[in-house]
Length: 337
Image 1 (cartoon, helix red, strand yellow):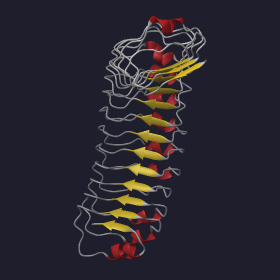
Image 2 (image 1 turned 180 degrees about the vertical axis):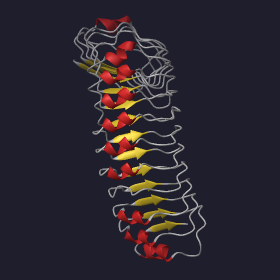
Image 3 (image 1 turned 90 degrees about the horizontal axis):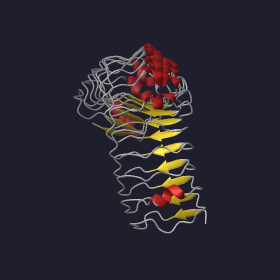
Image 4 (image 1 turned 60 degrees about the vertical axis):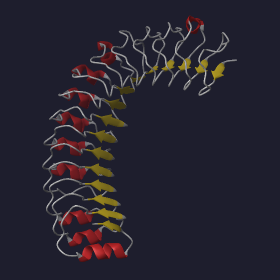
């Protein structure tokens, strides 16, 4: 037998395991410890232990390529096997990572108590995904720029006050999470991430964005809510692939022309007293959220939003009953006011 699969089986101990086993899946059981026998399984390549009650692990076999141990109670880790490519230890109680991590391609160590990570992390040239969210990190070194193969990076919910300019050297394509850190500045080099699809800068202290953000040609979703933005750079209109723009909870008083590709535009809880006529260029827009602004009137350009399915205007104080709203409702758009 080359595989042992018993996820969610209520196990409290490791069952009998054949010497030649290559995969063990004991996720979502009630294991509190593993025997040293694990380290003797010289053919084992993948070990799945997510959602158990483990506080420590025995030495692991040198053949192991993937360790999945999210959602346990681990306070430490044994040395990483030399062939380990994937290390998933999200949601444990780790205060440090092993100094030697092997040729990792995927590292997820978020949701722990890490105040720093080994310097080796920033030298993992083959790393493709890195998740260090929900820790206590305060600093990211410029050496991060050497992670040339990185596609996904999550540093959200830490205490990082400075984003290094070297972040623009990364080859990110999937997502970049930098939410809830408290930084006040985004380096202009972020515009070099021209292949990035998703950018999250929410819950920080940004008062402005660099104009280079308009160079992020592949961006499909941009989340900026709960910052201190008063304006947006005109270059944002160049984001020709952008589908969702989330700006809730800022201090915006005006809008530049926005990308015609938008499907979702969230402007809730800003300081907008009027909408520009250029809003009519958003002919693909499906959802427009304008709650809790300072609107008294609406532009006729709203009638050009032929794809609009929902318009939320609650907690504004519109003068009278704008005919634009009746026209939108008559063609099936849900209008909340």
